Length: 481
Image (cartoon, rainbow, N blue to C red; front, side, top):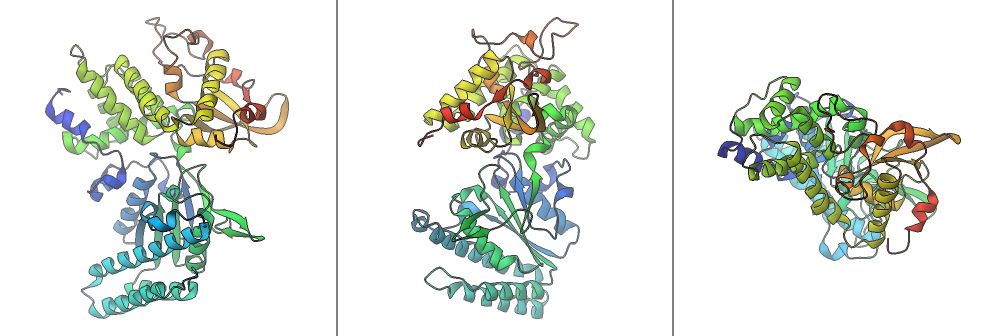
């Protein structure tokens, strides 16, 4: 295959990197790749799906909806984007309860609209469609009669919506809330409380929330009691998408998953067979686009478990290849430029202007990579949710691993492993601060004598002595951090 052909260029150039922008929802279903997440979703349990931006939460919702509908499940499945909730006037209010009330009313209106739209699917049964229509009109009437003080008639809201479910003929109504991160942190518990009072009393209503890790606050103490959705009691928060794609802990699994992601995104445009076996898809991607297998490995590592970053770095690597007129496939130098460019222009830009945060990241780069000759360090379980770390996790400049270790001098106290972004190391290459590769776990290739890894893997034995202390965090914490 000629990688410089217009067919390939168009196929790669038109990869849609955000699921909500893909207008062909059937394509979202076809290109989805499951790595065991689907089996963790329950049709009966209220759940929070955690994951950083770009890891695939929205895509998961759309696939799960179509998966249930195609398996003849008697359900109504609605996906609501929290970015669209609330008026501009309410969102600038300093009263979190007022903002929550405004957003909740918008959510109820959105639910009513989607219910009306779904009547088309039962229009052949005039009696059933009439009963369902009357129920949703009653539901809308309860919304419109909301008192000016922000109170809601939770019982009637639930009763009328359940009447619609019964008339429609569905066993369950699943309400999936996407982009929960769009709700202000101070507002989230109040909105969660309104959701809880309306929907959770009925087992036929199921709530799914897609939330960004470390930027979600489902409950809080208010006026002497806990409000919102309590994890383990009201909702289950045991699905963390970030943990499914960690290269350091599942190299072969991640490589095969990302191989399928790229293959599935391109197969329709290029004319490949979507039904090919997963291992064959990986082989096809490597053979078609890369000069060597390690090139694809480096893209997988640079993505740091994030599908959106994977697709962006792949596209940028292809662009570098096209600029290199002597190349016939994507090579390591193209990937290095793409990964470093993505790190500098996209990830670092996310924290531009946040002075203390930039200083803290620079401290980690100098102390961990340059001085300690590592890319990974340990953080006490007490500090893993510290605002500085949480902000860098969200910006995908730091990456928490699943592994927990104990400090050699503090047995019994768990420590989390955190690895720095692939780009942090690349940014040091070619400078006086670049660590000697021999200190890392893997040495040069025996056949060539060259280091194939742009960013060598750590020697895990040395990490036990690299601990980010509370004092280090406090040094960079102030009111404007």
